[in-house]
Image (cartoon, rainbow, N blue to C red):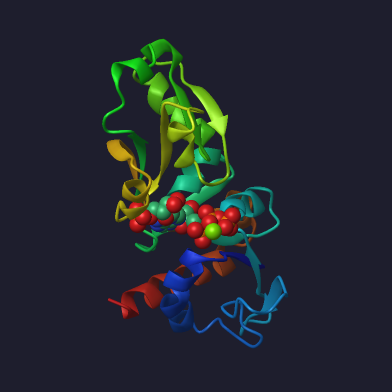
Length: 214
Ligand code: PRT
Ligand code: MG
């Protein structure tokens, strides 16, 4: 079996839980200095791969990994039917929100039928505005969307917000919370069917690891 872990901030937040699962072996996937992408675990039947946080759900949905950890922001954006998310790990908490200039004058105001949104989350953003009867035009960026309003590329952004420092530093104001976000343990549904024991043992180890941190 393969467990897919996200590098970056989720991996950092997850480290105590991972240590408590007893699955970590040497070389460790937690050591972000190593260039390796695949690591052994303490279980002979389980290897760990380390991928971009935005790609974890894709690795699990396409069966490259049986189990993984990723943000609910990513799950909502891809909405893979092949994925089951049985456990909220309560880490990587933030929210996905709409933000814009607080004093966007009437001059900058788009007719609501023509609003343009810069985001890394085109599906989530489009669905949010569609639910309000607005057909948003999406500018798909992978970072620095905070620049888009002042550079007149977009009227607003849809992005993750935690403390709000990043928005503030870029002169933006949160106007709507679309959803609250946290990291989830995810499982490929076929793996659940074909290897129910191995999968539920792994879910259990994470559940216990999580409980030991509380
Ligand atoms: O791998 P790559 O570098 O391409 O992706 P990445 O930079 O998005 O990865 P990383 O390591 O940042 O992890 C992203 C995942 O962490 C997201 O999918 C969320 O599930 C989770 N997460 C939780 C966050 C945040 N909190 C968060 N605050 N991801 C990003 N942020 C960013 C946000 O985009 C904004 O730039 O932090 C900034 C806002 O923070 P505040 O505190 O200034 O509001
Ligand atoms: Mg990053």
